[in-house]
Each structure stands twice: as structure tokens, then as C-alpha cells.
Amino acid sequence: MPKSLYEPEDAKGLCVYLEQDQGRLESVSLELLGKSRELADSAGLAVTGLLLGHAVEGLAPQAIAAGADEVVVAQHTLLRMYTTSAYSKVATQVILDKKPDILLLGATPNGRDLAGRIAVRLRTGITADCTNLELKPGSLLSGEVTGFGGGVLAYIECPDHRPQMATVRPGVFPPPEPDPEREGRIEKVTPELSEADMTTQIADHVTQEMPDISRAPIIVAAGRGCHGDFSLINELAALLGGQVGVTRVAVDEGWAGRDRQIGQTGFVCRPKLAIICGASGAFQFTVGIEKAEIIVAINDDAEAPIFEGSDYCVVGDLFRVLPPLVAAIKHARGNGGQASA
Image 1 (cartoon, helix red, strand yellow):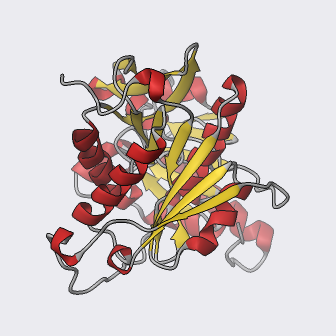
Image 2: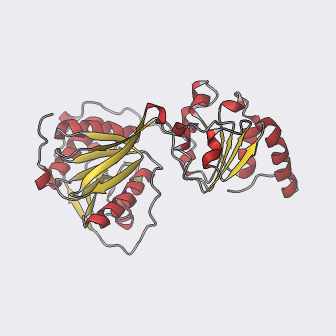
Image 3: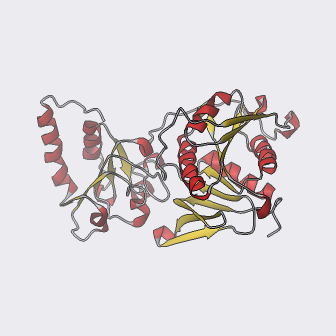
């Protein structure tokens, strides 16, 4: 691999790409700031946030409150909407100026797209879709990734190229408690950008409201054992004021969309309560739910792996277990109404 554009001895600090959409910081950016603050404090490093967009400088104090020591704000009318060519050019300009040792991005559609382009421009590598990060002596970043359906847990390092880049799955780290009293520096830069750099033009920007199961306080998840019948799953989730999640099998069978998928190739969730119905408990699923405060598992196989990490285990057919549970909740309320989360 060719040498990167700057050497390890010239690099310093952690940098977090602060992804925003229409003037709102994405939650994964705040999660990365919290984790970066933890890593930086252990090694005496500074945390820099990289904020690109148009009229977005008002988001900088939020990033500082979440853990950034400095926020570099690059604003331009051509950065109003995310485009690969414009954002990768400006991000590369700032990175070459700041020379961070580590660069972290959220493993979102735009974050993944941007990370790949930046890595090629800077001649460095990426540890993609990390589920954990560690900082070793000498500011060597170790990224944890899973593979082969969860059968392999790998730790990837990039000792010779800079910046050390990693994309991190949303929901992996808890969001930090904001500290409005934190002080930090805001640096505004004027990017070198023109219409000639715009290889694509956005004709329209349409957003679709999608359920964000990664933020749901209560999740009722279904696996192969539901056989595509979600009537009881949906009813229980509605009664509890929660969201419905599914395993990859349910998605592959066409029973639910990928916006409901939990696990290695889906969402990582941190609910207060997770009720898992008819899921065997393969690692690629449990990695997405293991940080729940309370896990209740229902499965008719007493040897199912899902029971190993559950707080409460119910051995039985979900179609026999859920009806009396639903009835009991309705009876306890007296009116059959929904609960608030």
C-alpha cells in the first residue's frame, strides 16, 4: 500500500466527523464524541469535531457539550446537501490541515460513503462497522469487528498509515450526558469549493419517516419461531408502547423490512426492556440486543442459546405464552389502552 499523505509522527489527536442532516446532528456523531472523550482522556489527547454543511455553526456548542475540545466548521452553500464529491474534497482539505491521528465516522449510508472516499484520497485504510474501539499505547487504535455470521471476532489495527480510520455502528456506544458548562474552541474555515467540483446535482430531497428501533425503550423482537405471524408481536409492542424488532431470518423470509432488523447486519439497540420471541439467539442477533437492561426470552427449546444471556427465560410456544400475557396487561389496565414508554 502506498504511503499515506502524512506520517504517524506528524499526527495528533482524535477527530470525529459530525454528520448532520438539515441542521440536526445525527445521534451516532454524539455517541462517537462520547467514546472519543473516554479514549482521549485515557491518553491525554484532544478531540476535534469536523462539521460540514451550510449554516450549521449553531451545532458546534452541542458537539462541545458532548465532549469535543474543538469544532472545525466548514460552511458553504454547496454543502447544503450531502454529495460525495463536495464533502470528500472539503473533509480531505481539513484533515490534511489538522492531521489527526484517528478519524472516526458513523457507519451510516453517508458516513460509509464518505469514509471510503477520504481513505482513498489520504492513502490510508478503514476498519469498517466497528462494534468497539480501544486505544493501545502509542495512540494505536484497535477496532473490533465481527465476521462470518459472528463466528469470528477480529481486532484490526493500522500502525503505519494516518489517519487511523474507523466507521462505527450507530447505537454501539451510549450517548454522552451533555455538559453545557464545557468550554471549547470553534474554528470556522472557508472551504475551496466551486460548481466545477459538483459531479452530481440534487434535484430534490425527500425524507421518509422510519422507525428508529435503536432508540426504542422497549422492543418486542421476533425470530423464526413466529413463522411470519406478527399479530401477537405487534399487539404486545403496542400495549407496551414499544417497537417491533426482528432477526435476519425474518427479513430474509420477507416477513419484515430491514428497518426492523436487529444484530450484526442490522441495528444495535439499548432498550430498557427487550422481549425476544422465537429467536434461537445466534451471535449475529444477540450482539444487537445484549446491552438491553432487561431481556426476557421466550422459546420452546430449553437449550436455545438465547437463554444464556437473558434475565428471564420462558420455555414455551410463543403462541401459547403471549396471549395470556397480553390479556393480563389489558386486565391490569382495566381499559385495554396503550401504555406510554
